[in-house]
Image (cartoon, rainbow, N blue to C red; front, side, top):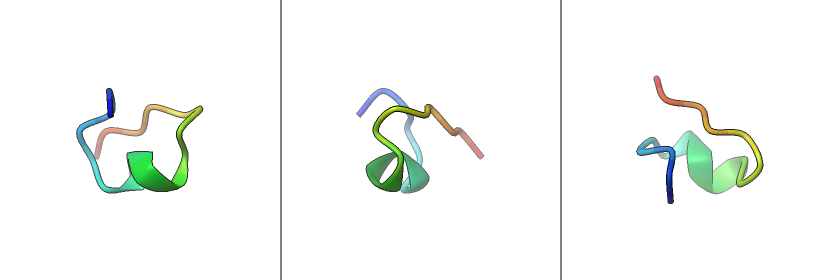
Length: 18
């Protein structure tokens, strides 16, 4: 995952880092 947040698992296309 390139997001780094658990929300990245839900949105593979969106890189949400909060």
